[in-house]
Image (cartoon, one colour):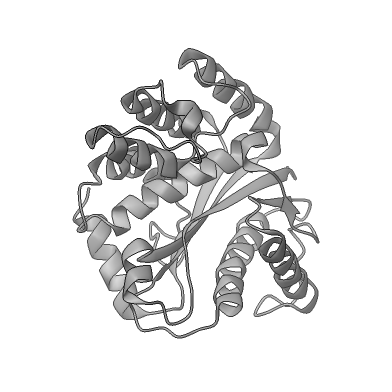
Length: 279
């Protein structure tokens, strides 16, 4: 049976060519994840997510970003108030433990979706790669487009629609151009037939799918950073709510559901060890 699939994608971290030591400490990895789900199940996901917000007393029109959790945790432990200029100032009266539980429960909604797959690409920024930013982002987008195309080609009538979180006007347009170029001119896939011909940019605070993709990216980044501090909560979320739904081929997730960018046997071996050591 042919269907339409929504593909919600978000990023975590940053990438720049020839990053300084300070930049690497702040952003040791760049991650992009995509949640692919049957569009027929979106209404159910949206409804359950809204119910969770009501349960935790969270404002419907405000987004709880993954990055807010750890900023709040740090400020609370330091007994510091949230600066007025911070986007998450509205959360000052919430216990960050409740917010962590909300994010965990939000990821738990994935278990209620019948058709879903998670696709992850990541770059280890200290690997000595010197690729310009536009090319690197294009490589990540290409990995997701290819895997969505391959996942949906089981039925000639399937169609995937991609949704990205806006970053900046410049980057939004850059992603649209990269997407259109790959779609029109192809790569090792000569003709993209199972994804829509344009990339959709939608505000994350208005999109349940993008918000959950943000949590997926954050939890995956916890696995990457597991030897850099205490990321046990994020690792637990990854193992319980995300790992089971990574795209696979004959039981293998590496190169299928998780893809290092650029391709590297050394980085893939490292990634395999990170996951094995944090079960």
